[in-house]
Length: 216
Image (cartoon, rainbow, N blue to C red; front, side, top):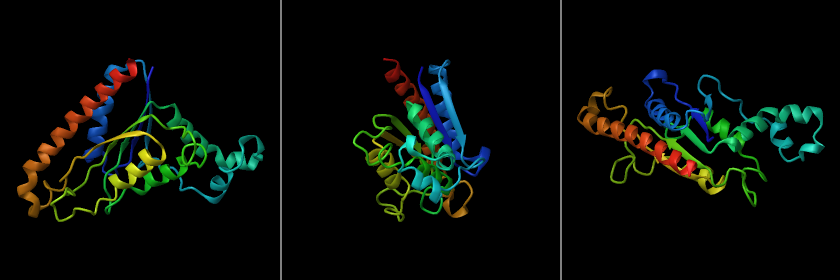
């Protein structure tokens, strides 16, 4: 059966828009794969550590040549990479914080980014997998808006997930999430509501579509 790796990173708990959309995707996925596997990491509640020098340098040593100390240093990194390699689909909640991704997601990516295995390899071990990113943001960064060009979430994640890791990545973008809370954005509330509704429908539809593809 198919395996889903589900990563949430929002610090907003039950008020999170990215979590609502990833939850909709996962619910639809589990309905199609009742006997499948879901690997879940809440990186806001239980962040992985930033990559340290020992784990980084050990990544360049062949597994059978590592000392006990090196194996211990690499243990978490290896486990995170293996989780990603086991997955058929990687689902990532990536709200925009200060124009970029949450630091907890960056830490996870740094742990999984291993030259010669997942990245910068002849056959990256994550190549061909599907990745779905829910990239929520408080405003809009579409062409024609004042903030166009200041989105460092989608461009960065597309580079890492698609160009480096070799996954086939899709983005779902709930936007204008600040509108219900910022008086100056009140007139944008209908656009926010439409974006949220569309994101939830897209998440459910995409989950079912991928489930059918993997079952074929």
